[in-house]
Image 1 (spheres, rainbow, N blue to C red):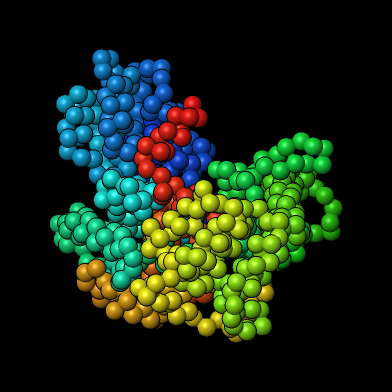
Image 2 (image 1 turned 90 degrees about the horizontal axis):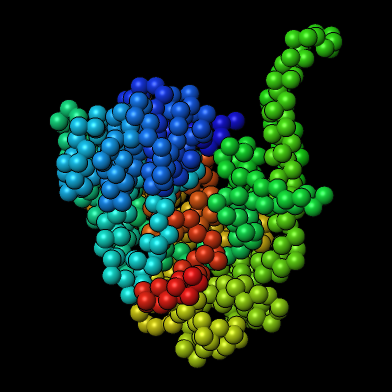
Length: 590
């Protein structure tokens, strides 16, 4: 099967980098990267890919490097003051390289370009902006790689909200440019506090400027694509619930940093595994329920092995040629065995957490989130559902999550009740974990002004697990958008509606679309969703599910960053800190 790096966003980004940067320069050059472009390249290619394209050396822009005056250097960097200064230092007073080919991730401000030109013009053979300032996390997922944006946007103490939104808008525009899409931009009307509308306006204006004139000086028309800007307050439930699909569960319950899972072997030795789309088992399993994963791992390992094996012909005698082929396949076999070991350990770890603690939480959480029990009976008294969680010896974070789900189910509670809940969880001095949600526009205290709950799609006929009945709100939005059912009053276009867009119905017989994978979606429509304030793994999963169901429309989801329940709670808590508070804490650590 095609892994994520073989199709989708990662493939598109790698092709663009290869065609616009590497192909422009002759073989065997030095490639110099800043921190962001290092992560960008790491996300979409391997060192062997670069080597095959003639890149012999990778260097960090900000580290000391030995001069190589007889070689040309490619600089791939963000257009920032720090990067420009570091570049100038490479050529003054004495040049480190024979020549420089400069490529910026995004538009370079005039003052920085002039500064570079004034100091290094004679050394620069090429200077180009390639418009990739986002990070492709998965085949259908991207981020702005900006977790700090959460506080800068939602904190009442923020002093650079507009600047942050402007930067995010620039990054979204580069995504659209990379996909060659000029989408109609939509936002949720009357969403509080309205930052989604602000971002939609910025993106729409910047897209218009970007596409005002193309290379043949003709204005680019809107493409059959939609870009929906949604605010994190749209669904506070999904990122707080204990999700039981493999990927979401792993990042919630196990400390996985930089996608690296650490596990112990039987002999006590520690091993590390990278959970990414180069791992075929991970791609197959990540969106499946943990109950299916534990059953499927042995079978999938066998299937992958079988798909790679050629059917042996003849009488079964091993020839020299057959032995040679077998030896060539040994690395693949070893890789399969490693993957099998990794996922057996990971699934076992997750089931251990589930049986020890999570199973007791899930029924209450699902009842509170859905508003009904597994038999479909409405929850009349949410407090009776919450009480067993509060009385059990769960850790504080799990109790906070349950309390929040209780409050969300009521669309806010009374001051008296809130104070009792905070005392019960024993977070009187850290009530910001709950209180600060109001800065996102999520009602914590009930009032006559509290927004009404959004009507949900009826999924009662769909088969599901009793402990996994909740469906993220964003899946409803995706399906309505693809089926052209989003109410124009609730989801207005920022400017004109793309004439060709009609959701899944836009794909006519004339287009002959039969895409079997996201990489084959060229003739279909695209739906791009951007969640302002972080996207959860369960919401990422929805993009793949809707794409697989509606083959004519590829859904791509992005955000400022990917969040987990615990990281979101910390972000919420930090909204209450003044800038000086954060600075003091950091100084105290030093």
